[in-house]
Length: 350
Image (tube, rainbow, N blue to C red; front, top):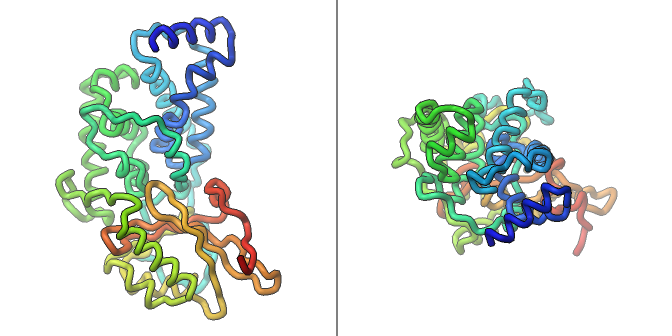
């Protein structure tokens, strides 16, 4: 394998584009996920990945094989992400207006940033089975969840990068320092502050808890029988327009958010009012198409258009579950649905 890699590197350095593609294709998907974790946006992650590959192609002559090719690519990708965050030109500075006028007052400003986008699980299926290093602190399923991605966005850029490289990917402190062009002491300091923020958020998303890794809720196991039953009940409640049945599935401190509106609705009574005002309006009929995002159940929600005889794309819902209840619902605009292979409309009948 080393001989194959060495030969590919030599051919790529000589200008062989196919050799370069063969060299990096096994790393592309994991690098995209890495960029997504840091940036919180799939569109930005795709841009960062392309810039990473262009930079790697142009600078392959500088790769001295003192580290692995994978580590070298992660270094480039991380620094491309940091450059994008410094530029900050793609980040909306204000919350988007809510489309409805009869919503209750939000509980407060939500943590989910305006640019947050869901990540399709189908893309995770392409990842090479690489286990994180022995020093990683987060399970793979937790490290792609919306709660974790949101928590990362609360961190300054270098703290964000240090935590992902160290605690998600399991790189040693010396490797992270080299990748970020800093000292091990600076990495340790950044990591200490980053861990406190992220652990506190995951332990208590309201920010009022005392945090700590020991108090974090365990990451739910995907696609279990309990989750499948919950998905079926959620779908049934939506399609029957049964608000009471849906409310039964929610925990008492459930959280509703709707990026890019940087607002949050918290608590089951508020959730009931929001859902009644936005989704369960008289005369509305829906179809829900199950999918998955960020390792969590998700649904393409379609609203009936009786005049056209079709159901039109309405939003993408991502739910966070705990055993047999829903702890959070995040609603995304129809802009993200095509990334999940979901059509713009569905026929009135199958």
